[in-house]
Every structure is written in structure tokens, then in C-alpha cells.
Image (cartoon, rainbow over all chains, first blue to last red; front, top):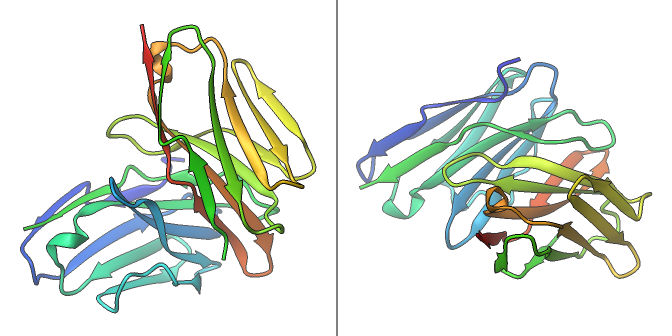
Length: 114
Length: 114
């Protein structure tokens, strides 16, 4: 398996624009996590899905953020409209939910909002 | 929800010395405690994990201990080498009907001086 795949790797956008980040989890995994990493706040859990269903979105900072998982092999994180303070590295991770197992991270998307 | 505290935030050690990182968690139902290593510009990767039915686990130069009563767990790295320089994250997770939410500590930046 190629691991968790995220796209794009880098995204530079202007304030106010819509940004969509994509994630393909490892085949067979049924838990998917979106994290945001900044120097100030570390690794923040934004939302996680189990069997494609959003379980906890309490970490989503504002209504500008939304996430979907239409099927077991694809998820998106959308920011609309984007703001400079959204600049961060966004990681997607997946795991197999059986008595807790290792979460595998994608390579991340470095988002810069100017 | 779960809250994970990690100390210290930075740690500088001489090559060959030991490094210890400590974490505390708040949810007594948490039962899975992984440790991740993140090198500069890369994704977090699992280095060792421990489950709540085990008090200690060792893998070559790294070991993790868990004190469920006190709700804290620690990472020990012996005979440190320059390649151990990285950011280390502890995490806690609780398996439940709604999935396994993985919450991270704030991270420890370890610098091994040659």
C-alpha cells in the first residue's frame, strides 16, 4: 500500500479564496483523522471519522471549516473563505479501529494564505 | 474530553546520555498510548506504543512506562544519538463504540549534541 496520500503537498492562496485539501486513507482503514499543526498550537485534532461518519468535530475552529468523507477511500477538508491565520500544515491520518491501532499519517499539506 | 500534557517542551542532551519525556492524561478510560517522532519537514511516525494492560514496553534503545493510577506515561531514550534529534509527541486514545479519538500532547523538541 502507498500509505495515506494527501494532495496537494503545498498550497498558496489568497485570503478569501476557497481551499480544498484531499486525503486518501490506507485501504481497509476505517478511522480517519484531520490534524492541523502550527508552532504555537502543536498538533490539533480538527475532526475524525469512523466508517465514513463524522464522530467528533469539536476541534473544527469555525464554520469556515468543513470536512466530508463520501466513501471509505476519500476525504476532503474545505476552508471557505480562507484567512492568513489558517496557514499551517494539515495532516490526514488513518487507522484500523480495532481496540486502537497505530495511526498512519500522510505527508501533509502546507497551506499558506496570503 | 481527553487532555494530554507533555513535558518538557524542549530537551537538550549530550550524545550518549539518556532522555526522558513525560506525559499526563485526563481521561481514565484511555487505554492506548502511542509515541510519535517527527523529523523536520516530515510526517509524525510511530516509534513505540503501550496499552493499558501493560506497565512497561521496550524496543532497543527506547522504552515506555505507564502508570494508570497516576495517569502518566513516559518515554525513555538511552544512549542517545544525533539521529534521535526530532520532535516527539505522546498521545492518548480510548477505544469506544464511537471510534478511537487520538489526542496529542504539545510535543518535545529533543536536540542531541555530538
